[in-house]
Picture 1 (spheres, helix red, strand yellow):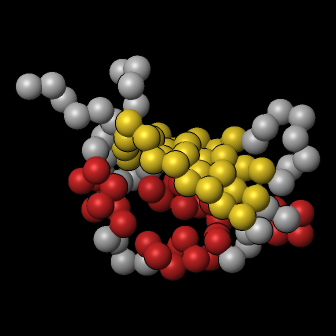
Picture 2 (tube, rainbow, N blue to C red; picture 1 turned 90 degrees about the horizontal axis):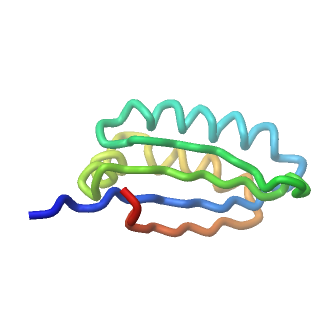
Length: 101
């Protein structure tokens, strides 16, 4: 029986200039906390080279869906996301199986 592939969650944030500092502080704080969760293997924050600073990517890597579900059930999870989302002008989320393990 083959092992289930890891899961990537890739989030593209559109952050207006006036909210960037607060947004980055909150996102980095959330990433540090999430990395302590069992099953969270990676949290990477990045920006396009040569971009105008509006776009920020978050790339998450999870062992399995059960780990993601457990993370989402933690007290305060939804509030943490709301604190970040209210700073944005847009957000796109893709959930993917990682194929090249």
